[in-house]
Image (cartoon, rainbow, N blue to C red; front, side, top):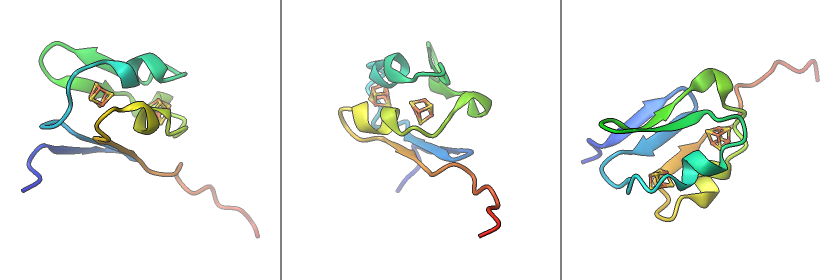
Length: 75
Ligand code: SF4
Ligand code: SF4
């Protein structure tokens, strides 16, 4: 069961596994992540650049970042 999976716009976290270590919060360049006392990691979609640093830094791999929303290129 994946009950702890929380899917935001283009960003997914496994809340059951998350250690609340704050590593992802510290590495996020645009400060799109916040460690809240009760709800775990708070994700601010408008700020996220989909750089995937949080996914890479998470020690247990509980974050998944999707590519930025497809911008319609002419080609
Ligand atoms: S993908 Fe980059 S910008 Fe988005 S939340 Fe993760 S570290 Fe922050
Ligand atoms: S780095 Fe991973 S385990 Fe640590 S707070 Fe972020 S999501 Fe949770």
